[in-house]
Image (cartoon, rainbow, N blue to C red):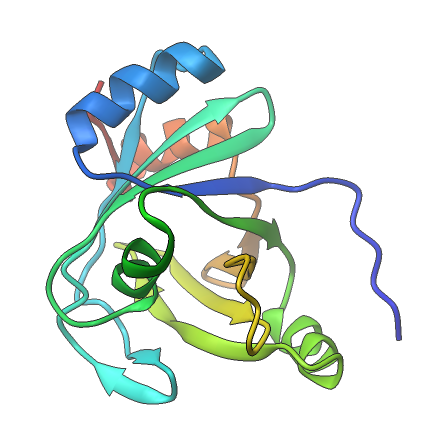
Length: 177
């Protein structure tokens, strides 16, 4: 089974200083509004197959056209971002495809030799997001692919500027700038 993608949905950057990064990437991508998802207790997270509960990272989202720009700062438990910073410094960390169900995509990439490095579930006030970051063993380039699916009850949500604005109304997101 070969899955085709029409576009990359998200570019994720690991940054050192969130305020400076919002200014810088806002200028680069023409982003004027940034959002932060409001997460209830985070669901179970795994790094290299081991559970961890203190992700210690912060995430904000903005939009360049239909592409979501994700900025991430990290601390706390060892995770895919701290490992990336040690190996490559700050910058573009991953690209992401939003899909209906991550399981078949993850399975297909694993057949191609990719490994799930970090994955889990994040619970919003009325949403649930599953994600999986995949890497290639011994890949010195740091290439990371993410698959993500977000559901609001039985509805699949496409993450977009409009849905983020609706998230502000429902309490699932906060406009921070």
